[in-house]
Image (cartoon, rainbow, N blue to C red; front, side, top):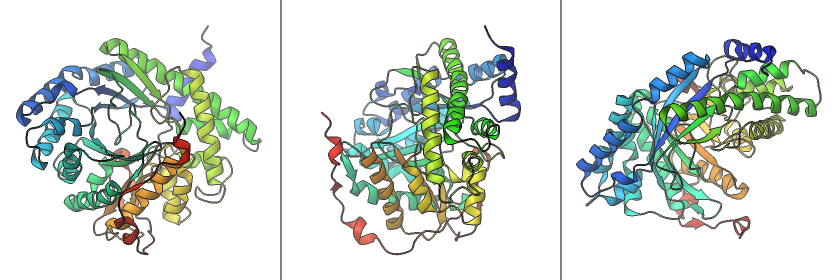
Length: 455
């Protein structure tokens, strides 16, 4: 029997504590669209996406109205586009960009917020199509609005492709330069991964992996505000009580995500994939992962103790979530995107939060250095070195790590960059300016760690 108190509690979570479904993401396989002629490929890509996803936004809005649960984003992820580029006759950058424009057109027709999958997996090396796609990323992202891109440059099994790491530093710089009028906005749509997952519903890193089916529905939940409010009721209690409180709250949040995912799956007649139970913050006051950490007793996020607090949070969220759904996947934990989290923004502005501290926090959270704005004159080699550090954490710890970093043209440390919407406000954070180009120029592959030999 449903407890009336639980109904009231859920309504309160939605009305006062920023509880929402962050995204319903439809994954669509584009393998059947491959072919030698780029115009034919673009037509097939557009037709397939608009055929499968034509009702996605409407169904999401109908579920919102019926259940009273806010669903912030409706999105699409597709097969890594490098696969299609590989199949083209005489592939080149212009042809790759043409496919990106077809994706953008399809996303606009369907009315979704973003489409992810302009991606390549190069953790062991490049195919011809993958090399071309990576080189085309700055042009594709600067000439489209809704297309998101990702590149996987390392894994625990393969090691780190340092040639790709070097190239991604250059690609990020070029992407920023081509969108200088928007302070490098293209970089906000580009993620560099180690150990990328196949069923991630969150942008900008979503793509439909090789092990996925023809079409699938994945849902990403949210709820940092709900967790913070729950912790306010156990102020001063020991960490056992804190962990138990977060677990119970995560359970409730995930059950709501499971309900929405199953309902969307039924109405769209598409298989249900996973619920990603990551706590995804927004710039709205009260909807912040940083505020959860501060509620545990830290004066400011970034101070000593932050990594331990985040480790507890991430673990408790996972434990609560897996009890609520048999199909938990994606990243599942806690995101720490600086520009998208009101508490992180405040901590970065006052100097309590540094890139080095964020790197340490990466070891115990969902992804890594996310939505970080750095001075526009930061070198490509420095960006590559930041990527290499994050990839090393992911590789050694057998977890997903990523870098979404924006060298905003014309900015310096202390400036503020406004992106708007969910992407928020980015304080320009300081970067160490000692050289690392000789390290990056070595190239080759950092070998996989011993723990990769698990068979």
